[in-house]
Length: 141
Image (cartoon, rainbow, N blue to C red; front, side, top):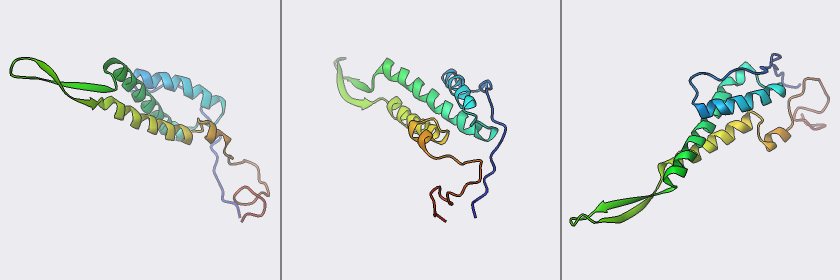
């Protein structure tokens, strides 16, 4: 017997971004929501994932601006007793790690939403009853 999957029939075509999102996140929302709406795969159940995806993209973009402004590596100087500044060490800009984490979250959420080439190529749940077996190939039970 095949598992029964309830498919929501009311896809969201388009909607404005939540006001609380950052400007970068809102920009991504305005880009991705119409695409998902056209594909008729965005439902109210997906909105949390879309919000999280947009927040992650927004954070990655914000951190990119910080990295461009300050560099990926920050130089730490000390002033000696004679008042001369000297390089003590170099440290990774914290924005690099924050950006990396945000990009990882965005990639995982994009896959979950079907927004990556690999996730779009995966088989989808079919609406029609077919005889392909439980796992999508003949004879699998």
